[in-house]
Image 1 (cartoon, rainbow, N blue to C red):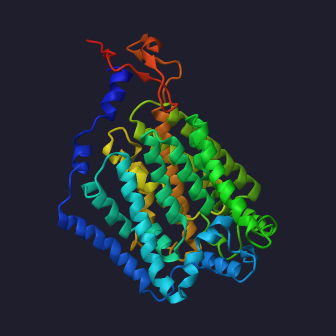
Image 2 (image 1 turned 180 degrees about the vertical axis):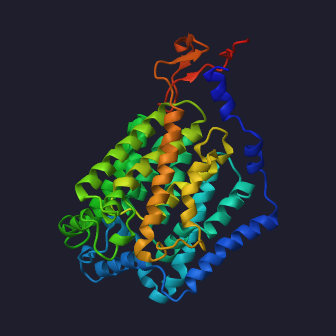
Image 3 (image 1 turned 135 degrees about the horizontal axis):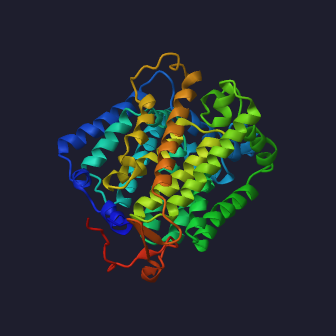
Length: 427
């Protein structure tokens, strides 16, 4: 069978994909939601006050209302727009926020799951949805983001929302969503490269212009915004401090703890990130299901940043994993490989890992998660890359397809003509 017909067959739904898309019985859906809800309850009723990351942003907003600079607190690391976004929270007391923030954070992650499923046209009450929701309830990164109340949850919504819009050809709207997310927390900056690969320059302008305009306006409305450059950025570039550094799973942080010299660790991390970016480009140029191409390419862009950027925490993976899980309905998805999911095993709640149970050593488990998923996805992109010559080799014969190509509307590689016959060789 030729590569053309093979690609078409790979994008058609198979028995597993149809089963995952099917509606789950309501007891199964309720059970999945119960597993997730119990984890949220465990956070709210735990001995430690939750929402500590969100509290930093609220504290910055209160400092602004009191006439001070939000960046006087070295732990406030977000862009100026986040300060004003947190102002409505200042009307609530710390006790009320400690109870509400974990619930809101969990709902945001759930919204991201629903949007990720919609990229592939999967229902929110499907068997796949039930499985993903139940898995979140026993997934430590979900527990961590709910406990911290970290604004990564906003990126976990914006990432699939932008891809869903791009999937339907609304690239400028996708750029605006990415820009709005960056204005609050610059996590989705690597996604700007997706607009470059797609040659969607207007969408890129939206993605850059929205956070630039919001940050400039917010900076002009607060005292001493220059502290962001003189205090916050140096703090970030040095990998934060002794409190947060042990939780950082980026290669430049973890490898020195294993005895690798810092310059070599930086070199290895940069080399790995560049290799993953090249795989993302290969994935974009490949044929196949357009939704799958969007998700896998965008995920590779984000994962490349997670490898090298500091800090890189376990809950960052909640940005890409729901969309990768949703791609299970596609036959050719990297998510069909067990190697993509094995790195998640160290993050399953209740599984004991000797010598790695302490919070100070948790980053060693987290780096397995980030590196393992990245390697599996990058290898899949490499193995499924397209020949840029536009030729398909079948049993030592070469068929040129250039006369059957048409330009794709999304800026990607040309599509084969629908009436192009499959070529097979009969022996």
